[in-house]
Image (cartoon, rainbow, N blue to C red; front, side):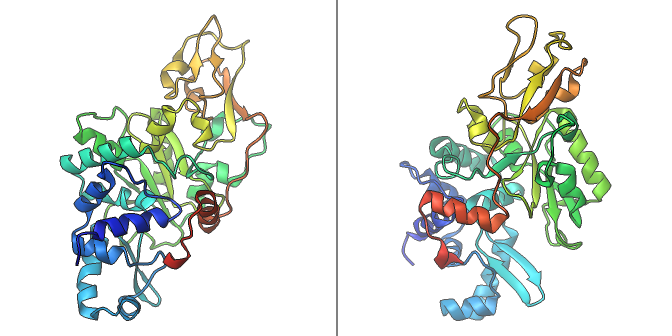
Length: 359
């Protein structure tokens, strides 16, 4: 085996519509070397995005069945690949780097890995993922802050996603944990990543996730919004499997978009905050809550910077006068992809990549 296993894996990960940004100083390779041994990287680089049994994979790769089996299960436990038990047997598949491999390192991350990741994210800037359509994440507004006259669609309501799921859980946020290891502890709650499953036993094999009831999950959602965190999920209509509760101090997505000056252009949102000048007392409570510097008090009434507001509604729930509410963004927004496969297809077209050989 030559020494290019990690380079091959990096190239494969970048062929996935989610992208895996290559950078000149090779920090994208350094992070893969921490996550994968050479043998693991070689195998991952030859895996498919669709699930295969060990028997199917051994036949396709012309590899020894026993040797493959000895590699795959440990790789799944280390969050390098995805594994699940289906009616046709145990299946294994390649994951994107994000959302996927990065998040699954939450149980392994140490100070060395935290710094490698920081170097990579700062240099890569999410190129390919953030600067092409469709966006990977969609802001889910705090439901009670939306103008009651607006038509609200199911994919715009976090509570709907929770109610329609069959299993629920919460896990530690990898971004918050990474920043803590770098000496930047987060002031917000840290175990806030909500995981959703379409079947009752979907999370039984997920060792990183603490299982919750539906009621406990709804309460976790309320706790997150009261703390001032921003609800985000995959930018699609159906099939949501997570609700992130994010902050601009830690979240790799929100950190990036908050620095861009036009965050709503990179994280999709259908809304913008509106101020009722007759009710606003200029107390500035909302300014303290906004993580995107979208609100200012130039005179006596709060002013909204439409280029920076992402329509999350976090500011509105603590307004003592009830002067803030979310309204539809002027000009409307494009409807999100129907499901994950639709998102992948649109993203591949936008990036000019063809992942068909990985399917």
